[in-house]
Length: 128
Image 1: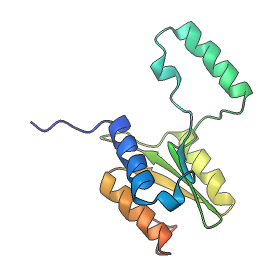
Image 2 (image 1 turned 180 degrees about the horizontal axis):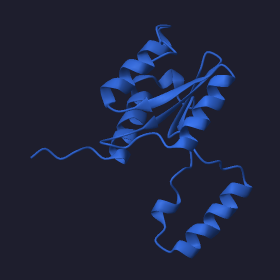
Image 3 (image 1 turned 90 degrees about the vertical axis):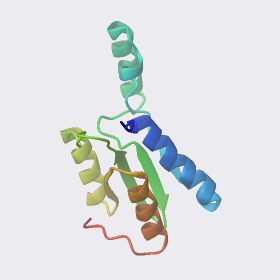
Image 4 (image 1 turned 180 degrees about the vertical axis):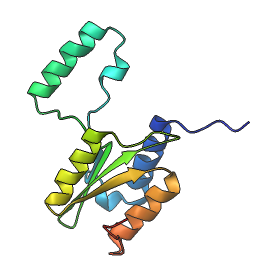
């Protein structure tokens, strides 16, 4: 039985491909600080961390990876298996799109590569 790739593995693979295959675009693709509380077992501590992060500008729904290219902000959320965009993630993407940006979900490494190559070469269709 083939082991499924985790969210973290797929996100890392996508980011590292971008970093290594397009060094000219380094620092234009980055992760956001989301999912912090999933890494903290103590719920009291998790609430404290989130309160501090929110006061410093963390907002719900930020996408996993952000890419800024040619004056356009792209926000992509990594999804695996049955995982779907949450309402606040849809709101975040909608806010980006209302200002001329683009966003959506990425479900595979191949989709990431294709999407980034389409953006770089002017073939990206915002209505994906």
